[in-house]
Amino acid sequence: MRIGVFGCGYVGLVTGACLAEVGNDVIGVDRSQERIRMLGQGEMPIYEPGLKSLINNNLAAGRLAFSLSAEQCVMHCNVLVIAVGTPTSSDGSADLDAVQAVARAIGEAMTEYKLIVVKSTVPPGTTQAVRQIIEQAQNGRAVEFDVAFNPEFLKEGAALQDFQRPDRIVIGIDSSRAEKTLRSLYAPYNRNHEKLIVMDIASAELTKYAANAMLATRISFMNELAGIADEVGADIEQVRLGIGSDPRIGYAFLYAGAGFGGSCFPKDLRALTHTASSVGSGSQILEAVQAVNIYQKDKLYQFVKSHFSSDLDDKIIAIWGLAFKPETDDMREAPSCVLMERLWAAGAKVRAFDPQAMQSTSDLYPEQIESGKLQLCEQAYAVLDGADALVVVTEWKSFWSPDFERICNTLNYPVLVDGRNIYDPELVAQAGLKHYAIGRSL
Ligand SMILES: NC(=O)c1ccc[n+]([C@@H]2O[C@H](COP(=O)([O-])OP(=O)(O)OC[C@H]3O[C@@H](n4cnc5c(N)ncnc54)[C@H](O)[C@@H]3O)[C@@H](O)[C@H]2O)c1
View 1 (cartoon, protein in one colour):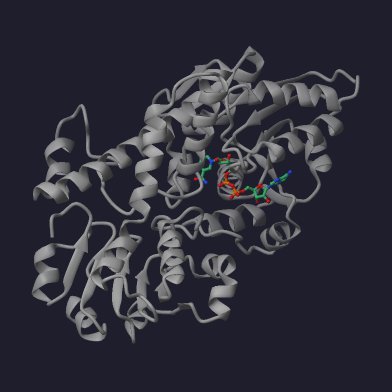
View 2 (cartoon, protein in one colour):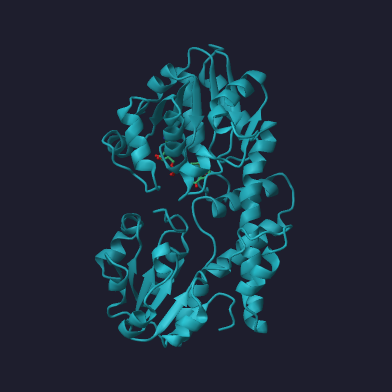
């Protein structure tokens, strides 16, 4: 198949590269000149494990190309995938400007039948609105086309595996021609057993939000319980094991921690809440999930503040892990941002290290780097030099078994805040460190 993918971000690049890998002819289109230039030269604008070599192999094999021209892509391809961003607007709704712009460009350029597949996360009704935009942009030419909604469930950090070995492939369609094309597009990932779940378009659009809202709910639920655990002298890690062993509950997404961030959960919850209110439906659970998360993201700052009795002026706080989760460089709505911004406002400085998110952090905070409020160090242990406390915000594997004695001996004050509950309290105490963690009654 000839496939055009609009948007060369986390979703678009993974989709394009994986579809090229199984033999399709793929063009990735982006409006960012810099992205297209980098990709054409084999450089990656984002970090995702394995993506660089997959893209470069397919570029070399001639199955993958990148372009700024929507028109050329529409002319060449018969399946057009929309994978542009849908960030939060000022009123909390999903900002659909990029999706609509791509729909207009497709409508203006198409001269023969196309299947347009919306992969961006969008509120119910958007895919039908895309159909109308394309019709209008055709300006009376009445070229035949179908639209479909095909949510993406990949996780950053494991995106290639998720795309190539999906749990399920949800397809929202209203035409048998679209279904047939999508069945054949996904056939390489559907050999072992049937993974396609075919449904109407509105249900597929809501399914994506429902999945993220459910996962976020489990996290906020555990964070709320962690607060209770601290008050009653319980350990949330024991509670997690005790409930996760029930197969009706399961272990996934039951970790208490510094709150959820990233490009999806927070924005998708806001968008779903906005959709609920715009159709006059209740969203009490969704609102509570968000409120708990906002409270939780402040927790690490509160530990540091209370340890130093609110006197953070000129304190230097070391941070391990900046990305919103391990194995990505994505800083969107990362808990580390809340912590750093609160520390700076209180007069403290930050020394930080992350295995992949150093560039995205310096892109985000150039002024703080310039003024010395933020110092990014090349190595994990280098952040400890001259620092007053260490906060572990992201649970990268390389932070799991640190030299606690070295941490204790290097810091000005022996304070370790474990924002992901990855450390054994006994080992930390043995090293002489004062240990803060989430819901562990320390
Ligand atoms: N990142 C994830 O883990 C993930 C997972 C599942 C679904 N999603 C959803 O997929 C969509 C894309 O997410 P992402 O993380 O890949 O976003 P992203 O911000 O990484 O990438 C979006 C890309 O779209 C490009 N773009 C914007 N407007 C454009 C236009 N008019 N024409 C061409 N390109 C344009 C941007 O330059 C950018 O490169 C969002 O709706 C998101 O909610 C994301």
